[in-house]
Amino acid sequence: MPELPEVEMVRRQLEDKIINKKIIDILVKNFKSVENNSSFITELKGQKITSINRIGKYLFLSTDKTNLYIIAHLKMTGRMIYVSYKDDIQYGGGHALSKPQAKQPHKHTRIILAFADGSHLYFNDMRKFGYMKIVTKDEVDSQRASLGREPISDDYTYEYLEEVLKGRKTSVKAALLNQGDIAGLGNIYVDEACWRSKIRPDRSAEDLSLTEIKKLHKSTRSVLQDAITYGGTTFRDYVDTNGKHGNFTDKLAVFGRDEEECRRCGSIIEKIRVAGRGTHFCPDCQK
DNA sequence: ACTCTTGTTAAAAC
DNA sequence: GGTTTTAACAAGAG
View 1: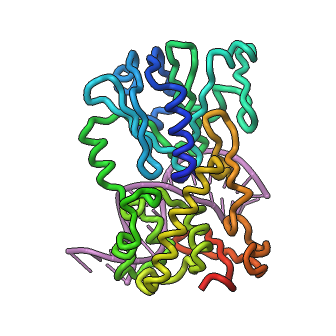
View 2: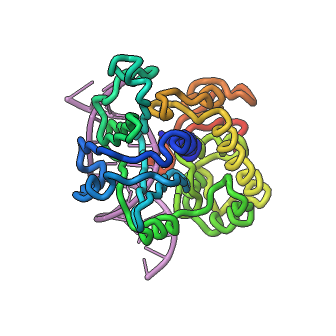
View 3: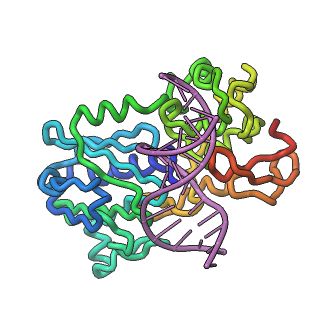
């Protein structure tokens, strides 16, 4: 499940690998993965990616063509796998990558971009929910406008979080998952942030005290920053552009640790359903 | 065979 | 009528 830290890892790596490389060929193996846009190939072929930005879990790629941008979303199982020309040669066209995806293209490859230097970018996505779509500047702007502030951003203050939670009768978890208010948190980091701030994710959002909001503000920020430091979390599907796993997985306090001992108080971590999602928390030290 | 997994959104319910 | 909850999407793991 790629959330903000995982998408940021992909962004940074793509920035190093594909900026200013000319796209000389495109293969779309699953039309839905380009949002059924028939001009995806003709528009993009011959262009260069000039910058790669990210807001929340969305990637925004600029091209050197006027008014031509790409918005990409990995959803649950999307992967961006980069294979250089050198890797192609070294492994005899076998495209060696570390597990879990040894060869490219892969069974789940939906889109392939071929660059002028012989390298390839493979968009692999088992469940076909993710996409890369071409858009105009206006569409980029409206997508950006639909997203709330990022917890790692300077404008994400505890006053902002207070405003977001005020009067909301829904759960803390549902509120934190709402990308229109706060961009970048997903199922994993919401659970982790709630554990760090000792707040139960099924609490009503409007019932949090100012002290608790300040703690939650701090923990949502720190958990994302820590996860970026460790290269993101691989719980099930995420790998970076080299096919490598994230190392924050070992640092998780509650997500996927149901039936195990709380690292803080030793109680047994429980798993319940909140906001329609599997939710992990410590019944003793989270109130 | 049946349940569970999740990011986003549209539809349904409140 | 704005807010909240649920279902759908897809395909695989267990």
